[in-house]
View 1 (cartoon, helix red, strand yellow):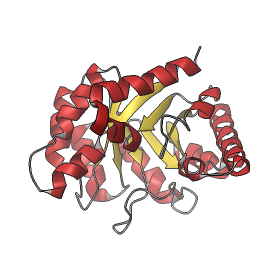
View 2 (view 1 turned 90 degrees about the horizontal axis):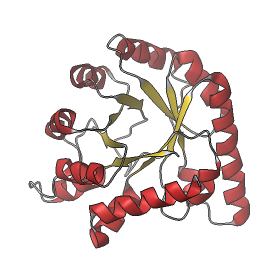
View 3 (view 1 turned 45 degrees about the vertical axis):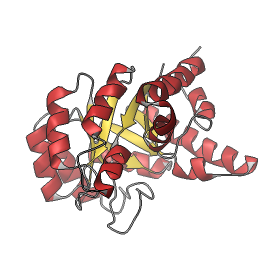
Amino acid sequence: MAKLSVNVDHIATLRQARRGIEPDPVYAAVMAELAGCDGIIVHLREDRRHIQFRDLELLRKILKTRLNLEMAATPGMIKIALSIIPDLATFVPEKRQELTTEGGLDVIAHQRKIAYAIKTLHRKAIPVSLFVNPDVHQVETAKACGADFVEIHTGIYSEARTENAIAREWKRIAQAVDKAAHLGLRVNAGHGLNYQNIKPLLELKGIEEFSIGHSIIARAVLTGMDQAVRDMISIIKSGAE
């Protein structure tokens, strides 16, 4: 069965709306773990718009599962990763003006920089994942850079509204997953996935873990974190049967 990692950035977004102390993303992460998720994801952005360094420090100390740190491949963020030692570091593109990550990392265009960043984290035995669009050439370059994982960006698939568009994007994801598996890369997937559109992706047995944040946090507002996480785990489990 594929695993589930829960992104708690949006809990921090709500907290930062008032620059207060609640809701606490660390508490939300603990609730998600107790509900049965396999890991926690946070994106420490350079502008600190949601997750703060304090959150990252506390999560590193208290999590019982795995900490996946999403980060830009910049010297400042690499220094932080080397001090925190996450269980997985995921390099993502980052622009100050975007609401959320808008697409995959262009590994081809930044191959030398990314390869150097991966090598630097590997010196501390930190596994590295690259968040890439479902493109076989990006996957091939991720392997050439020395990545351990790729996380396939599912945003375009999630936003597709016609049957043809959904089928086309599903096929692109399937091809990227197959290529990664052939190259010996481990595969995660995420962005925009919810309780409905994840179901067709459960057919792709090469995906090791789904990274989901917004839809789980949105449901948690109405049902509570425990129930929202358990509902997603139930769907993923049913797809493995």
